[in-house]
Length: 312
Image (tube, rainbow, N blue to C red):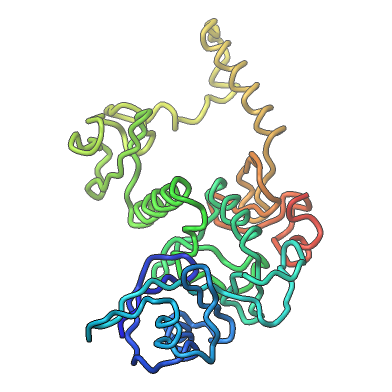
């Protein structure tokens, strides 16, 4: 008997069992593949739950779905996680029936509504974690060690549009980690892998805009030192020179920008880079050193932060 199942609303996968197999055996087969205990799964077919003691053949015969020939039975089943331990969601503290269980040592659970909010918030702030083996994933919402979600199709809960952004961000993160970069031209953003050591980078016209730019400063390509990277002159060196009007205006603009940065950002507690919060929860991740910290108290993210002021 061939069964097509969807685990936690992910993509379909094939499971082959004997016709006399029970629903319990189906749970064991799928649970073994995904590292989930069988008693934490619920099997749905055509909007009805299959009881663990029933055989698959008996149930499908009742539903008039059994074929008249000797061919294998092909059906579509949904397997979802169910909270059989009466453990409350770590975010809203309600005991929900259908939950996602994080692969941490404490097996924290989060209901689907809170899990969706958690994914959306971290995606909007680009705070997913790139793992060389697992891919672009999220850890337990309680910041437990070794808790990255291994079943990446869980993130389909975001919906088609947001899931597309998740795939795009994951590809960009992978590109940057292997030494690539994104084209700086507005509206382009093509991924590029320039030759090692070369400052001159040309955006591939087959996938991008064809811009030729400097790898160091991202400005149009030039010979010599990058102007945007040159240190400002000292007071002694500037004596005797008259500051032009344009330069004076740029200085005023730069000062205004620095003041705005000071007002709208907080320094990362690990590397001190300014980080801006433009919405979402208090769980922050530094875009430079990847340190996770709390916007409210400025300390490394902890279960206490999540409990006291995750969304406040």
